[in-house]
Amino acid sequence: MTFHKPPVSQPSAAKLWPLTTRFVAAEEELSRSLGSKGPWMSGLYEFLRFGIKQGWACMFGGIMVVLLIATRLWYPAASPLERYDFLFVAAVLIQVILIAARLETLEEAKVILLFHAVGTAMEIFKTSVGSWVYPEASLLRIGGAPLFAGFMYAAVGSYLARVWRLFDFRFTHHPPVWASILLSVGIYINFFTHHYVTDLRLVLFAVTALLFGRTTVYFKVWRVHRRMPLLLGFVLVSLFIWFAENIGTVAGAWLYPHQMKEWSMVPFTKLGAWFLLMIISYVMIAALNGPEPFAQAKKSSAVARPDPVQV
Image (cartoon, rainbow, N blue to C red; front, side, top):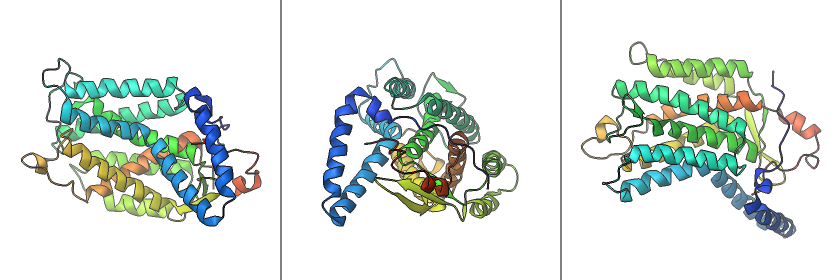
């Protein structure tokens, strides 16, 4: 099994951000206090800590969802800036703020930019063949795809980049990165070609199961690494993306053909498409970080390497 050498771990972004320094210190004191109050209290604290870290990782995507809803409800019709264009400008400003506040690294920002480019290319094609539409006018667009749409894909990349760092991911039986890259390229090509030739989605599902079926991800919520089948993680994240997509269509940000006259839920079959997109997203982040084997994590003392990000 081949693993890329992981980059040198960086100090906690939260600890480096002046506004959270006091909060981090208080959280460390709270964790020491609750850790001495028995397994039930420790378990509750770890559960809450898991939720807070997930929320921290979802920050960019969460802000974008809030903006979709808020602009649907309250965006002024007489504004000289179209709603879609406002969303694009807002997304760029959010990214700038995250980098300036050291809540996102430049390496992560580069990957998110790549996500935006990959997503925008797909949006241009998918809107041209009528898979979905953006019903409102905008100036900042290419074909039928407003430029803010690429940030919906970037939100997935932002989440994966941050959750990898927050939970100190380690793996067992991870496939070689080169093999997963080939799979992701095949998935991306199929998103285009299935409109003209045979859809290879079932084959891609099978290859994904073959490559990642034995892979376990170890994630550190608090003191120790917990574990979960990586495929299950893909499914769970895809499910939450599907929920977010329903919110996006309710907010009228984009619509599928069956929603043009009256809104109805995004078909559950779209979960498969999001699952495959998750693979592409994950592979980009894995190629950047280099999946670190869990055996190596056990050899290097957990005390010597602190929790990457305290929240």
